[in-house]
Length: 427
Image (tube, rainbow, N blue to C red; front, side):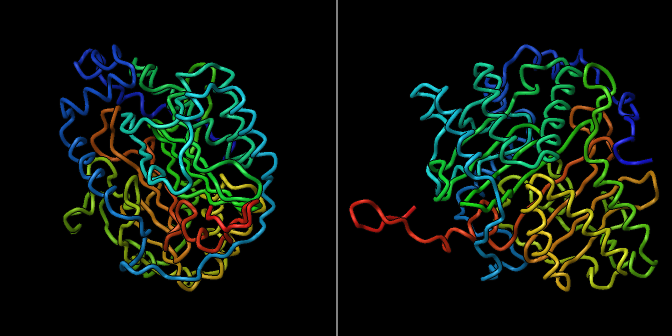
């Protein structure tokens, strides 16, 4: 059976919560702003508020980037023409701006160097409200924003994003809280002035979908991004049959099962998803096994597991098939450039695993090198009631280590712009 032919299982249905409990009777009466205000003032749930406070603390740190030991490796990234259709992307933004009033344009726009790049987050709580929220603007503006995404991303990447949004809407209906979680409960932000010759970018973020895109001429950096789903399938309604993240799941398990026993043992850093051998802080209630989620821009993450260079040719090919799925948001030519870049560091690329690897086991895996870091994790329930990780709740993310996130490693390489009055100005 091919990936596209796989059907939703409906397994999550046995974990649908009791909607008569106060959490849901209150939530369904609130919009996103009321819901966030109660969270910030009542500190409910306490564990998530504590995480939010920690995020605010991390945000005060100057950006450095993900590293293995606190030292950023230099000269890993270069400016290159990847054939990105920058003229079309800029035109799509100009079409959006023409629909906005002055107040909306001001709300939408931030400086290219704004630290607000880093204030994306994936919970359903609207923790930082910046830019325009799609479910609060006219349909024409909403469609114009989506056109920017469609023009920037690959067709298959845009399709994946739309499916994540529809699944979020499905969850909102499932727990009767569509004002908080719906297909358009996402914020869109511009950084810098859209240009075919100068750097700029955009951010799109909300529950289970966060995309940060940096653009310069014909080059694109889509990093960091986060994509998740609870459940990862729609089994009723107009979008029945929608499913995401199962390809990353299937390929990851296929790779782990293909390894010989001694290599599996080296790759498996922990045997259990919640393992008594884990050090303090290795797992938390929100990110669970993820290390590189929201606000973790400067985290030190030593390599774990096994070097990909120890794999057979077939196993290495599986690694790159996984990575291609994680690079799906990029246009094809940019994706090919990135995959070639990653191949240069094959001897420094690690694969690590947490959990079992039987067909039904939930699991976590990470692929990490100097130029890419991806994570996959099966989670316990947040809205659904499963206390143990299940395969229908998935979180995935991508980071570009060594200051690559948000295009930061490229920015010093970009020449200053010559102004019309003969003075050099910075971008």
